[in-house]
Length: 438
Figure 1 (tube, helix red, strand yellow):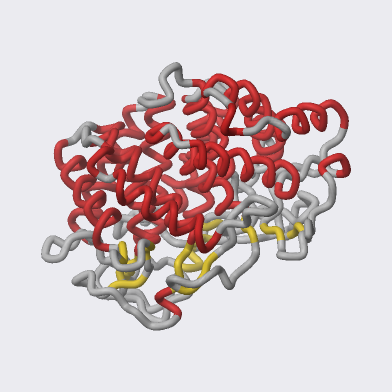
Figure 2 (figure 1 turned 90 degrees about the vertical axis):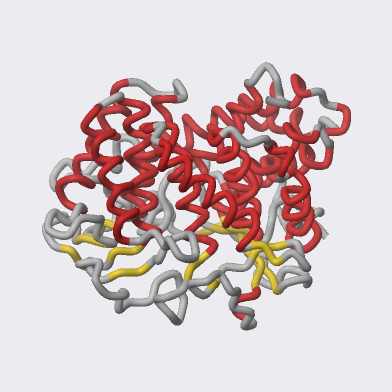
């Protein structure tokens, strides 16, 4: 039984006709050109008219600096609200990437610079180095001064992307400074990867728990996933041999250490020596992270000059696991998570999961030419445009429940225009490429 309301009720006017004609095309009969012809207009419309139009210029905090990232379900601005390194950096990345991909001009580069200045002047700890996890709305006080590698990764990612868009030598020097700091304070030369959680002065473990974990001394697949994406972009921006060395190490971690080989999925929690924690909570498969891991590994290998054929069997295994246990074959889209080797038991469909699934599916289609990946991309895009995109108030709903109810705030400390904006641009780049197999 279909729980979702008809497409006609969700997408007004001529866009409904475009969506309907696209949805009726059987993917197995489409060539790359057909897939691009049908999908590119939808992706561009979502990127420009739904995501970018929501964020610019409303998120620019002209009074305090940085970005306002506190909007309710209808996009209504909420007063106050602190500023976290994760979403502040994600917005610097979004504005920079849209410029570099040719979807925006100097006004978005100025918006990226606006956030870059806030990171440098308000979120950077001038005494100890590194970025605070969270500051107040003005940036004048560190509300949560802990140094966590998840946040440092996003800062390195954003500033490296800003440099690639702006060619500002100051930004390149700042990215180098961040990399060198992480090397000296957090890299684990004994076991590989990074120690993740520190006090403000980097001398002791952090006192707060992050990412919903009970311990602060763990290594997380999730954090190292974002260190991988950051290092990929930083290496492209710097071409430093030591950055490539670290990128190769992160590729090894994300393609081996975090993968439970007897299952075909990743788990999140590890001791410092990468011994996996296998408690019931720690053995949940996160379909979104596994799918994101696939395409970030593909991109990292390209940056490092490694052939992806070395890892294709792993990519197939991770994708097929998520497809078997976490995919809604009736309505499209992936669920949140589930116990290893069992069907999903967290049955919301969250915006970031669907965004990453589309990029992963298209990358797999580019590598394999297998129709099932193109079909998953198309079905997930259809679900996104029907259920997650808010065509009235802008941006994407945070989640859709099993009953088909869409809701959640449009922006908060963890939600900005990053997963969805990046998904649209990555998918567009693949579909517009002359050679889909590159």
